[in-house]
Every structure is written in structure tokens, then in C-alpha cells.
Length: 302
Image (cartoon, rainbow, N blue to C red):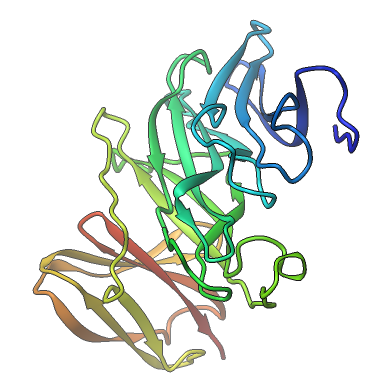
């Protein structure tokens, strides 16, 4: 619920929420609450929490908190944590929650926060939330208008799939906004073309938290020609030597093909991919080098 003139209550349930049924047909809801006292007026930099409600127990637990992490806050463009989504692994019953989070170490040139998509896992029906991961980890501190990596409006597939790999795969779509905050309200903001990105994020549920570092500028992926009907060339650059895998996914999250998987020296590499046997449509190419990942869109035409 949204109030322009905030009530005297100390917190309000904000506009973002999501829900999923567990294997016992009990509903689980994640939602955002906003602090309305002190720093709670519109545009002041909102303190916020992500909370979870379990229908079976009626219990509310805290998934993530931006209550005291940032003061006075990320600015007028966004609460500290918000936009929660929830999914479940039907095999294990584990719950996953993803959300957008602001960080004082990632403030754009206009003084507003760039967001990352974060996630956490629960093995006890939402009582506790563990293994907080920075999933997109796309910091661009000090970036001018048009060059920000501001990850928001994320959507998590409610079904988390391990596919026998030992990793739980979270399928995400999110907007990579190139301008932190509404451009028309924060001069000299500019209008930008903002890509919607697909991310198949492999989560290790065995207690080993991935250490995902910022993607260096020399870490890149190109697909030429694109769109393509016959053969295309995949050109990628790795900043250092390591285990490289290139996988092709359909837009519904199904892995179509492992294009390459081997140890490679750091530098620029090229390989040819034939798409003659593929059906027309949009595919996602995912390049992994150790714990670093980037994606590209491949369009197949006939």
C-alpha cells in the first residue's frame, strides 16, 4: 500500500511483493517495508527491509535489512532494499529470495545509488535466510549519466532448478538501467536505452559461497554477425587465464548447447558457431571464466 502523506505508524508495507506455494501447498510471501519515522519522508533516502511471511506458521522473518546500513540513504531514487522475488527448489524444498540493494560504495555521478541484485537461501521454510550473494555485482561508482550499471526491476522464475548439476540455478530477468534515478528530475540526466538482461545464476547450496568479483573492462563478449542464419563468430576476451565455458540457453532458461569448455589463456579468442540446426528465435550466450560471467543475445533467423 502507498501513502503520500505517511501515517503515524512506524513502518508501512510498500508496493513490492511476491509469493510462491511450497510443496505442502502453504503460501510464502516476501514483501518490502519502509521506515516512516525520521528519514521516511518521500525522497529522503528510505530505510527498508525485505520480510517473509509463512502461511503455515503465521511467522514473519527478516530476509534482508537496509535499516541501518546506509544513512541517510541512497537518495530519492530507491529504498535501500526492495523489489523482492521468491522461488523454490521443488526437490529440496529450499526457498530463494532475490531483491535489489543500494550500496554506499556504488554512487553515481548524480549522487544517486546504483543497485545490484542480491539473493539469499532458506532451508527452514523462511525462518532464517543464509548465504547472501551479490548476484549481479555490477558496480560503477562515479559513473556519469548514460554509463551506469543500475540493476533493478528484477524477476525471478518461481521454480529453481538444479538439473542434477549440484548447483541450484536461479533464472533472472532484470533491467540494466544506464542512468541512476529518473533522468528528467536529476539534471544533467539523459534518456538512455536500457537492456533487459537474462541471467542463469548457478548457486552452490553446499555451504561454499561464490566469490564473484567485479567484471573487469577487458572481460567482453561479441557475436558477429548477429542476427544470423548460418554461421556466426563468437569473440570473447578474458582478463586472465582460467577455466572457460560458453553455453547457449533458450529464453525460457533451457540449456541448448555447451559451445566450449576448456582452460584458456588470458586474451582474445574466436570461435565459429553453426546455427543451421537451430529454430528461429532469441538465444542467450553465457560466458563464464572462473567466477566471472557475462552474457550476450543471439538472434537466429530463417
